[in-house]
Length: 394
Image (cartoon, rainbow, N blue to C red):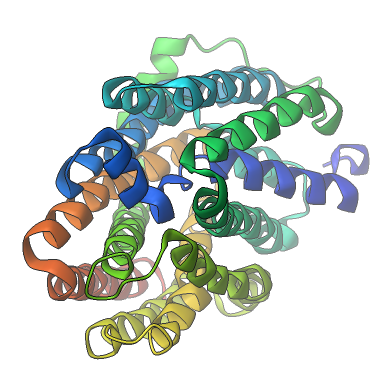
């Protein structure tokens, strides 16, 4: 690869900021879910439709739109998709009824493609030995977006109401839309326009057969991400319940513990570069399982909840990084489509986790959430062990 096509450090940081802003939109709802439900006068189970349909629409959008990254310019696609997100957020900010708010969130999910174009885009523009580092850096950007979304949404909602959150988000996305033409470079080799769109989409199915490890990695991340979504929705309802009595700002403050991921994930990515993605992923999964099992005995205390949350935020994102590393070393022409398979599975897991988290809490409260987390994490750990044994112990 020509050095002229490699990303500079400033470009890497700029793309990380883009990843943070465009990712944040799906997570503003998490700490404020109880306030939004109260405003629209819907139940705890019904409000779960908002994040669930967002995640499922994202899976559909990725399936239909992300393969275009192997045909058209990643730069142009990213600008189009980010503009679509901006308009969807505007609908959510203006919505006066639950159906319109949910529709805006669903369309928002459909256009949230940029965070999943960026790793494939960046992987073509860094040296192979830095793949883990750049993947981890972009993942840290995603984590930063989730962190700012949760902390900021909780505080802003407590002070000014939930609707202001979505006006701020709309403004941030408008700024990103205007900045993207100057942040992303294009190469003469893009696009690979010879392949028709329908063939790109249909090619996903033989790729699944040819690269079964991407299915395993996708299943692991589906379980990992589903548990993550279920935890935060359940935690927001738990902390704002009459038994705990905290406000949505407290949920936001608690989300600040995700800051540990921003520092740890790039370091863990470099460690995975040294010892191998599959081995590192198994270690992370075992640690995460141990941490999630602590939620039930420690769930009655806000301060003790910090312990399992710290553990989960330390290693959870690293499971995603190492899972992506298992296929991002393959041919560059395949990486966007392999990412499509992986991320579609991930967000199907997120959609199921959204429904499961709110439904389980509505029926079985915090104890039910803890059982759900333990079973999901145990299944993910088992699959990481299978991947380590079957595809190479490195």
